[in-house]
Length: 337
Image 1: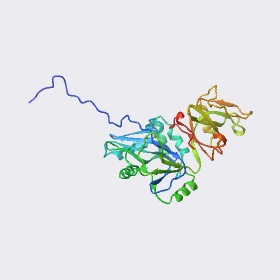
Image 2 (image 1 turned 30 degrees about the vertical axis):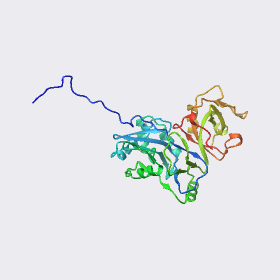
Image 3 (image 1 turned 90 degrees about the vertical axis):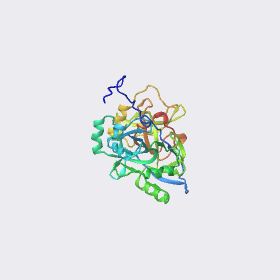
């Protein structure tokens, strides 16, 4: 029997967005300090990459940087992570996107991938400079927020996920022979070690003492406040970056860094920095008289490895420019050591 159409047209059902669709999470971070020893601590390699939160649901993967930027387009090969969440109503992983120079993680190599915003360009680069996702935490599983669970429980759940796809891996954890791990990291020139309290809950956006980072060489982000002209082979160009960190509302000068800059990166920095008439540092640094200084808007962030701090928090000892950080907000850069 034909009952015809309903009097008000065909019935419709409003699409309901998945709860993870627009969610963002500012990742939990660790504090610098002495490496803690004890049964309540586990230890992980600190990967030299880009911190990323991966939201996986409905066959889609969305990648978010630590400053809440959508970086999905930059890493098309990581869409393969969708297979990890096939059996679940949503999955959120915290981890690091890593590129390699041979067998060694290399932030410098990753530079060619992390700033790409064109899908076609990203696809081409993924063929020559592939990345993988190294997961070290599980923040959501099958409709349930897991951040309030102890780390050891989150880790157990993470290890039960299917790990057959080469696009990702789970970060190894160690609970013994810590000195051996330190020696291996130091000998290989890797970034460092993270110590994590087994019972720690995940605290988004917090820099927590439950996670302690140890770096054989000090390393952190700085805000670029200007640059000075070069000499010799760099004559007429960018010689070194003038960098600092925020102390409340004040941008304090920390030193200058030129080592590590290639001819290409010098040109890239010059094109990125927006000239300013005024010095952005609360106290103007002393600049050699024979060098031309160019102040800039304090918008860009650079990662620098260095030996130690000099007097009164200035003049970083033996600084080396590691690379630009687009996943860090300038106003969030503070002194870490």
